[in-house]
Image (cartoon, rainbow, N blue to C red; front, side):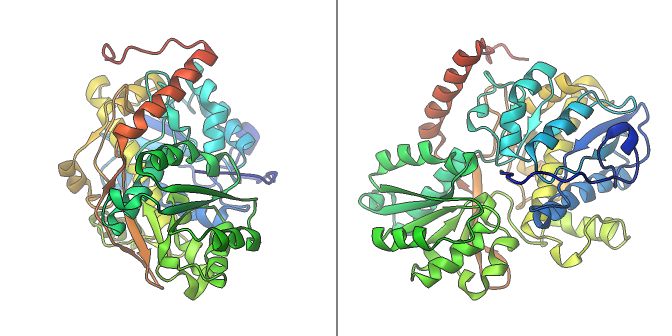
Length: 449
């Protein structure tokens, strides 16, 4: 996900600044020949620091666990370099350019963009450089089609799938898809590329099921929404799909309450469903629901392992332990685990050594995390099973729904699957249009190795 609107400030790192021009506060020792390098475009300061600190803590805690408990990935240690970006697209691109070829002899196998605008900005560069761009639950939706986009992976739940999961959940609550006919479903969305990304999918689903599709934009930063919720009150929708971000989410929840819209009929998308989105809203948020491919909670097996080996040992990147198991921390864990499992998959073909970008692409395209494997690595229930291929760069395609009970997120469903048969033709149309625009000859995925 992701949007960034404010100019970035120069943040000085502790080491390697003269060489890198970017921060490196948590980078381990310099790379050796048997180490895999991972550039990290972090955001520990600036407007999104409250989420970034938790997100990256989850990634780094899992990387340290792999290095210190498991001895690396088949003996290959992970090393990393942080680039402080404040979620500025320009600085994420700068980080990519600086480290796309690795560091100190250790190659780069993939690049976390963690930003939809950055994924768009780097799309051509990643393809030209043969560096996979990884953006779970974000990125460019049509990059699900790996035939056209071999180096972009909107893992787990692309934006179309997020819309579909929300509609499918509403159908469950209403008693079936036939009950959607004549209903009014309003999307209150951040007026940005991120917020508008689901519009085509919702329009398609509205046509299929016969519900009225109401779209209401919220201008950045969204700290005043009386006009929007006055529109909601006039339209009288049955359900609201909330696709806001940052401060606009708690403001939306509080304003909805002020205008009398029931919070238990508001469903936040992936990026409007963290503790940071509900705590500032106070009592008004109780009953609010959100789509969660990254559910909150510290009850999973991996949390037990991390607490013992990392947190209790004083090695965690998490500054405040009360956020252990928070939604954003768990996002970091899941992103790190999918990357580690992809690298492990690639080693099965290329040997137990560091992988380059082309090998990283092969690794992600052959990623297959089964329920049995999820149990082995301690992620069962936290991460959905996922299988990728040349033609399928999303995998997963499901999310749980969670509800805020006033103090914590509670899972209220099992995995709800998106309507891929309906959505995939639309994705393929957009991918084909992109290929035509760019003069790309799509890969024949039937022949892909």
